[in-house]
Length: 410
Ligand SMILES: [Zn+2]
Image 1: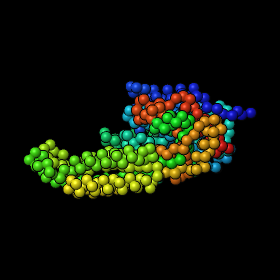
Image 2: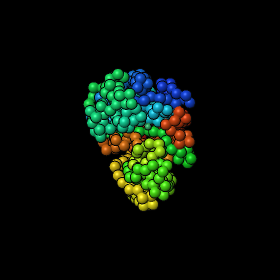
Image 3: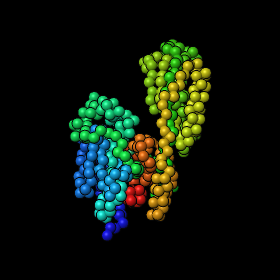
Image 4: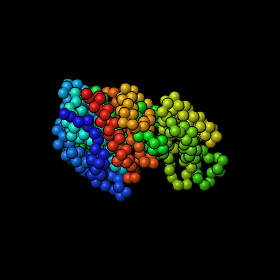
């Protein structure tokens, strides 16, 4: 007789506590940069924890970890779930980590209840989701999904000149498998919300229907070099002052688009960047994003109009280069409704949400039906030691994940 598997909230919470002891930083957070000794220790702990569960372990050449629980129909596509154990330099205990530890708790609960499933199950820990040490972010899932070549990823270097290839070898994480999709039938990722909406609305489970559409812009302002003292104010064509106005305009456009849209101006380069000289060339990178792609396009047009007005008034020339777009990602509607049903069956409140940040699931989504579920995040604080989700919130999320996995795998 098998029992209905139930999440053990205390065991799940204890796993968070123990994992946070690896790379601890003041304030209760964690620092586990991708492929650092701390990341390697976290991976070793996960391996230890999975050993009694009888899972088959496999690792690919970019260090992604796969723990497989065999099904009675091994030829059928596995139901896969997980997230990432790496953190930003001043990270918390939950971003990514909860996705892996809730997945582990699902495996533990199934093992304890003696459940066998028809489809195999796979627990996944992706390499370098954060991109803090090695750019780009979501490197492991990118290589897995052939969005980036393994060769290019291995050649990426950190600020100390250490390559991904070297870091993988030094930490013993260069696995023998060629990174490639594993024929999954479904992918699920649990993550903390990284925003304040669920807490503010008393939502237990966020059903993530997709990600925002982001549009990345670079602007180059051509002014005129002149003396910062001798030139009369009205005769200057100050590129930096024009960019200062542009930054504020971009911010206003983001504020007007909230809550469904955002903007950011985040990188600047200035020439000659010399004291006493009026800047004649300034570059700025910015982005606008919105749940509705049409609205993001309108935001970009508003940025363009604001820049034209600034250019005319200040007599500078502004070039706008819309150099990249991202998303929108639309997750599988069937999986989203399954998550909603499973939450409701447990008397949990749900809310459809659109993720503003990138996640590994975005890369997996084209490979197989994919979806994400959010658990609340106190005060919306994330990438910070103060990041927090409660034991009960995590257990509810893990239970919905478990219930969904069972339906998909039966
Ligand atoms: Zn994350």
